[in-house]
Image (cartoon, rainbow, N blue to C red; front, side, top):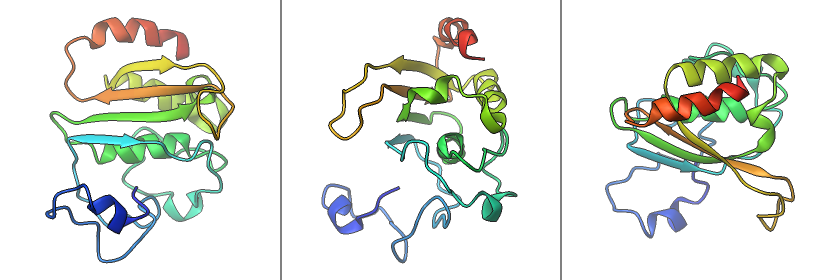
Amino acid sequence: MLKSPPLASSKIPERVNFGEHQADTFTNDLHPTLKAHFIMANPPFNYHPWHQEMLKDDVRWKYGLPPENNANFAWIQHMIHHMEPTRGRIGLVLANGALSSQIGGEGDIRRKIVEADLVEVIVALPDKLFYSVQIPVTLWFFARECRQKIRIRLSCQYYL
């Protein structure tokens, strides 16, 4: 997820291994067994094409194969796959459309992720909040172990 290892490594302990070379972590995952305690990301909104044909049988699509014209749920599942299995957490920014889109099975993938009890909270933000993006965005937070998920699950039913 990092494009610039020299810049990124200036503030990260030396024990972090960025891989043998720069790579697209999405299509060429240099750390297939990595399980992170915390993942924070701002993936490209509605990214396409994301090479779905090349990645159709990928182990990361536990909740369903994302549609070829939008990588939002591919990014979400990529991060869930790399989340530490007992205490892992994710925070990411997505376009608001990810909350309600039904295209290419996105609704089914979203429903399965919610039913797997991974969604901690989703926060909707207004438009024009970011300098480079004028559309409204959402902050998605996922957690493996969260004591307050029952409250959140009720509010997520609207988006299923």
